[in-house]
Image 1: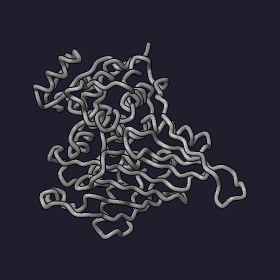
Image 2 (image 1 turned 90 degrees about the horizontal axis):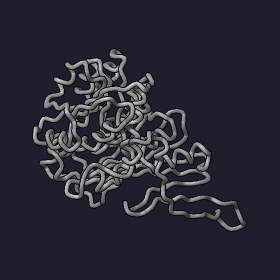
Image 3 (image 1 turned 90 degrees about the vertical axis):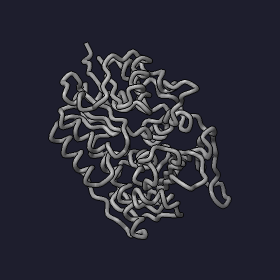
Image 4 (image 1 turned 60 degrees about the vertical axis):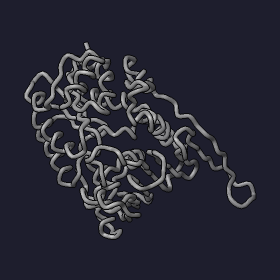
Length: 376
């Protein structure tokens, strides 16, 4: 008989997307939901027939019934709440970013090690159908030698909750950098970043950040490949996109310009006597990798829990984060049941998050190169 765990999900805005996935996962025996808004708690609980409901995460942490906690809470709470979950002897999954400072990253790692429990950062970008396709291409050698990597995340954050106002762009980096670092398997060791543009005064105050745009160039450990990363959050007329490009010697993958389009694969041919080599150019549809999931949750790569009157932006703008949500849940739950490190454990999460924190510091110092500490 398959071992089953009990999971508490904290935060029912975007977090509600994960409720039915946990509920139907064959390795999850029970689920609790937590939200300070009692109306939201009741609505979600009634909709999915969830009996266990809490308004305070502390009540979950005191209760030995719950094996794991999945945090989908505001960014300023990620590190403190992750530490509290781990210190309570429970496994922790947390949405991005892992933390807001290098010290917060160190503190989460220390709590994870002391507890012996799993920590997983729930980065959607490394489980999108596009990334799973590109990863398989790389494993088959279709790109040949990788020559350059580029990632970007464009999003207008006006109108979002107040804690996002003026947030430094590259302190929220992982949607764009994670797939590239995961693909090449290298740690970023140095960064030079420039801030660009200007923001209205009320957006500067909260984080003392003057930049609506930040663009960084990363040096990777033991690699001759450079990685470029750009993030926009305010005052920049570009529709939403979380994208990455992989430039190889034999083939290149480029994300689509517009969300309703398809990505492009360029393949280089052999010299035929002309200047430059010939290319083939193909628009491709990334396959849905439902076969990687238990049958009971496969449908959630395609369909969200929100109806047409209450859609979350991940579906309106990002296509449900590329079908990644059930893959994230399955990896987190499986890692606990199988007693192994999750795919995005504390060290990996810290290395990915630190890249952006150090990039922002470089931007504040006029592009001065910054060393990125190693988390090991």
